[in-house]
Length: 381
Image 1 (cartoon, rainbow, N blue to C red):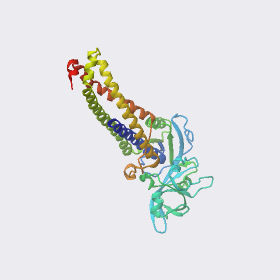
Image 2: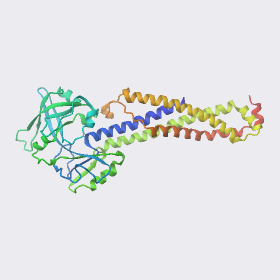
Image 3: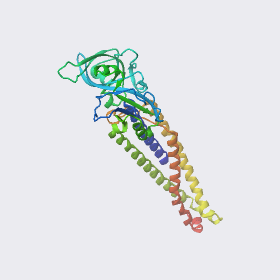
């Protein structure tokens, strides 16, 4: 039972810890790309100020860097949504026809993705949070106002229609973003047709994010800057690193507890079989051959614990993965439910590591077999 419970806790720790890391990284990447390329300036705001030309060597195919999967353009503009009874400050993120909607399709709760074709589109995608605040639903129209550089002039106004509503659970982005046609921002800012706010770069291997970020920076024009999402959101990624420490600590504690329980069990086994040990020694068996009997028996018990621990642990994780029984506060964890990432490699490492470390911890207490005298052991009752 100690081994089984330990394995269940370790499986949950690794699967949910790694799952949460991957899900949060996936959401940040879905909203921002893995690497962003923009004008080299001191602007750290969420809105685009200085445009860049999309006529670049790396667009639309960044073939110079092998880890790059896709490059797409974007632009942002702050504005205010006005309805008959409510108003809300928000950022319009403009995207082009090459935008990959796969991320938002996963979290779409109503309607459909905006259709951005040859003709400028008034369809927009809003978050469930914004829709509830403004009492909007799919098919509704609203006006959005954009302040001009000259405060004495009337703001620009655009009429949009809600084509779809999404809910990613990442409130920091959900409550601040509206996705629509980039050509609205180009017209409001009086940009040329080839001018955009920047580029979002998606990569194949996220573990190579830092390295790929350097390579991308080295292959773009000196007037442009490239920064990874870990550089843009350092606080979130530093927080995610703490999960690695938590996982290691939990695994260490569980293996230690399981090992102590097995040591206790081994000592009880030796005590119960003292007479047998004496008889085997009297018949000529050496200490190591007798110790192996108890180690084999301990390995059998550990194996049973591992078997039941895996059956119960993986079963519970699959239930959580498909039914989301355990919910989380999205304001704290950026997700609505505890995400699960089941890896065959992780499961094998946990099982093999537990077996080896527990058996290693049993070698020393098994030395007690060599201290047992055959004469006294046979008389032992």
